[in-house]
Image (tube, rainbow, N blue to C red; front, side, top):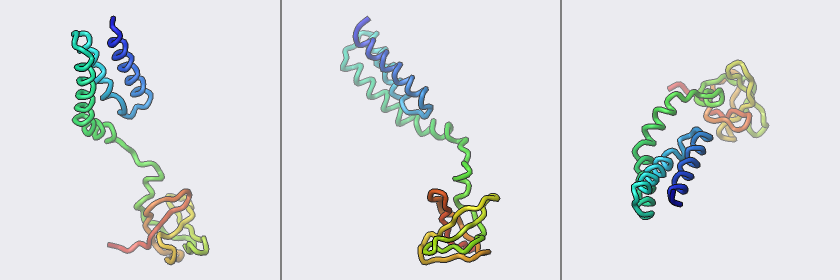
Length: 147
């Protein structure tokens, strides 16, 4: 067995181990390129052809299969509690004033510290606000106006 066979086999195993460890479609395309290069080595082609095949096959697999794979692998993404709050309309329970560092709102039965998007804006208890993002443990909101 030649030195190149061991190199391509080692790279193939390395890329597969990384793929298994990360489960994120990170190196599977390079594993395909390494497999193609290994076959070319076994067929007796020189190292230039092997490296070329590795690069071309890895690139082609990445470009043409990654969008398809990401669409179907990530299609069952469930929002976490954190992500599910963004975009919700909440009722303010304590005056929101960034300068005074006050404000709370209740979301899904839990009370959150709340701040407005703009420092000069205040919201009063009973006002509705839309959550635009979360910063640490604070909801960042803007006054909700029905569309």
